[in-house]
Image 1 (cartoon, protein in one colour):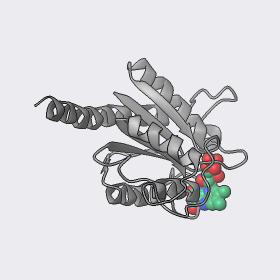
Image 2: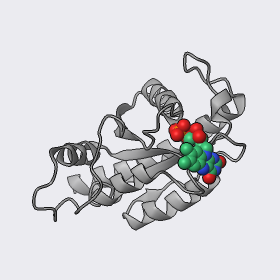
Image 3: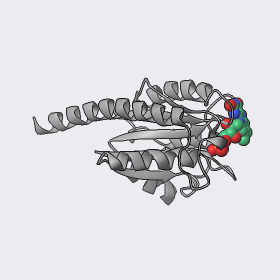
Length: 188
Ligand SMILES: Cc1cc2nc3c(=O)[nH]c(=O)nc-3n(C[C@H](O)[C@H](O)[C@H](O)COP(=O)(O)O)c2cc1C
């Protein structure tokens, strides 16, 4: 099973990539194949039209479409900006549909304050349902992100470490249930 982790922060001095790298390491330790999709490296133009409709789809969008199709389940990592998830993530999501269809998607939000981006997480759950995917009920919120990691990007917050373990347990349960169902449907 392959898991894509999408980093929805491209801000200068961003913090969200830290929890994305942490989760990638933990998924690898669980024997899972991962693909870290960093929107800072995969810079998409502002959406003019969707995959399948755009007459001259930019190559970067075609490439990302293939990577998303190759993932069996996904994790979206986003900061909370002005009470919602990032614009760069929404722009990326709007290009795609079948890439997410019938896949489990886990939500991770990051904030500088104590609430961990709860507004962003709740709104993103709604959007995930709208792209035909299964939003994981358990969300991973990373509050006070500036103090949660060392300079060498080690997680120092015991609370976040515990939450991350629970999140990954739940994510694996749903992602593997969907994956096994699809595999069984193919062999019938
Ligand atoms: C434009 C902007 C808006 C923000 N709005 C919120 C907000 O509504 N709620 C919140 O808890 N933090 C807010 N913050 C603080 C961010 O959660 C914090 O800077 C966090 O590190 C963002 O993730 P990033 O470092 O990956 O960009 C905002 C930050 C920016 C840059």
